[in-house]
Picture 1 (tube, one colour):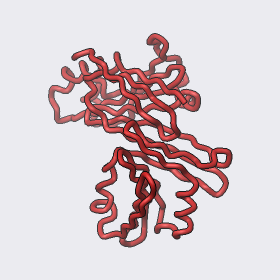
Picture 2 (spheres, one colour):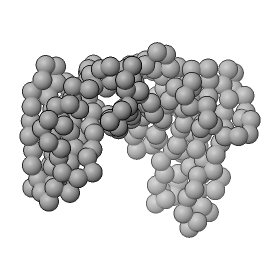
Picture 3 (cartoon, one colour):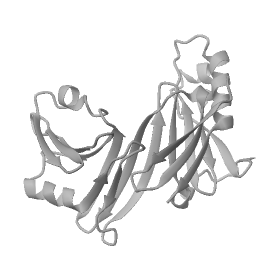
Picture 4 (spheres, helix red, strand yellow):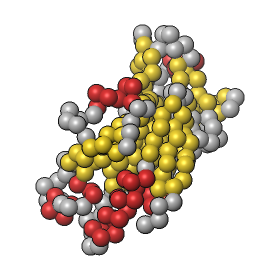
Length: 247
């Protein structure tokens, strides 16, 4: 495995900036995100994806459902509602990224949708979109996560200042300025014998002064040679991956 590193800059939904050193063994990643905004009379979760990430909604999630589009300066809004009105979602669609919030039931009234749109600021850029409370003194933002994934692995990163409580209770191994943990995954008992001794039986968690990030490797039980090939992949990724989170 080559030790070549790419340095990637990504924006978190709350406006934080991430600098990610990514070994080339990881391959290209698709970027996603999660954030929550809540306050008096308001509680919304938003999922973020690169543009086109929601392209399957009209055909596979809400086939035959209602679709409405609204133009805004710098982005569009798309409202989807299931044909039986059992579920719905609103998507902010920018030139590069999208943000989605889901409703557990029919699409809200237009006045409710307008109030929701007015409560948040959506801004898009190639390195990621932001979804922030328009009046942060009233609405608080939390649970912000940046996710990079492909068919080899998933990386999830959060702000260390708000994520320390998610770390294991025991002390991890030292890696320079970072602490590292291996946590066994809760996998199907039938799969455990095949995964034993491979990188796939663990979730790897790293913590440094600015970020907490995890790595989990995808596996294919039909791949008979996965042990030899992918141990090298895991070693290269775990040795070179670094994440810095700054506001």
